[in-house]
Length: 181
Ligand code: IMP
Ligand code: MG
Image (cartoon, rainbow, N blue to C red; front, side, top):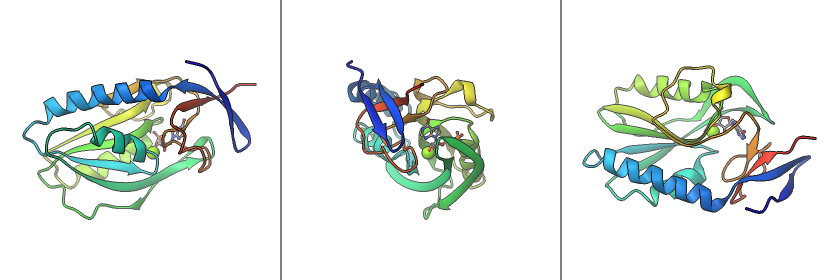
């Protein structure tokens, strides 16, 4: 893959995961989920804003009956986590006795997923798992099981494919890594 350097606001980023790599990995995740949730009518819960592209591309590859809804959570400010996770939009539907798969763009400290899992578990779902496109294992602070992981990546800030730097860069098809210098 040809490395491209781009600028998002005041920072430089370099190509890290190509759109093709992302799509093939999502196809593999969808295949696994299609088998594991056959006959379970899973309810996917996408975490906005970051997971909108992942949720869209994954759902198009799910071939079993399923439903999707979204919540909105926020914790990041610029390139650092604020440590303070807030839910901005909640769920309208009941998840009692449903098989839930949370769709997240990236698990960094794990604080966002710990809060989401905790809130959802209180509503008695039949099962509750997490599917995340990206995972930074070096940053994790909360011990949360991640059932489906697209890519394990190093502790470097990334942007693109739904992930933002200060609100920008979500529209990029590839994922880019912050360039050191
Ligand atoms: P956590 O709560 O620290 O696990 O952070 C998770 C949230 O922070 C994710 O849902 C992302 O929205 C955001 N985030 C974490 N790392 C990055 C990154 O490298 N780039 C863009 N957003 C990130
Ligand atoms: Mg997010």
